[in-house]
Image (cartoon, rainbow, N blue to C red; front, side, top):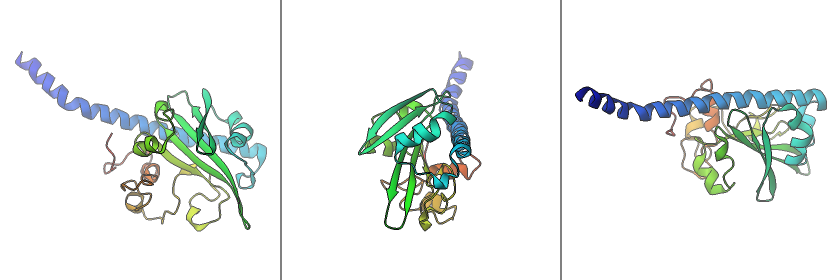
Length: 217
């Protein structure tokens, strides 16, 4: 009985750590796979439509229907309205999903197209009502923000210029520490717009969640 009791205590102490480690592994594996597959789809679309910098994408529907859908392996796609935008929720066979929000912008001196990819390692977290409250509290743990702005020329978008779908790095100054500490977007900030850099933190660590990652799993 004493031996069984000891085993029970050890199991109770180690089980939370094992569960947390498993969750981290799932996040790491699916983030890396998503990054690879979405950018492979972009490259395949370029073969058909030319350089992504020259694409004239009107909105999410146009981007999905005419550029991405035929080149990406997925099991389901559905519409999800958010404010004035029509998003797509795309589900994958590994149990993950992504919310795609692409828009067209034209000013007197520049025309750009691009937007956000909100990746959820577990699809159910992308399929909750798409509200600010739901998405904000899950950032950096249950959803991760990526960006796609290949023809954006503003200096704040330099880490997205001429790129495919990349972890969100808008206005990043290139300092590894500010991926954590930036007061607006940093992975360790409590600002409402914060934690957008969390995917970049993991990418810069070889798609492994670092030991000093500020969000617990």
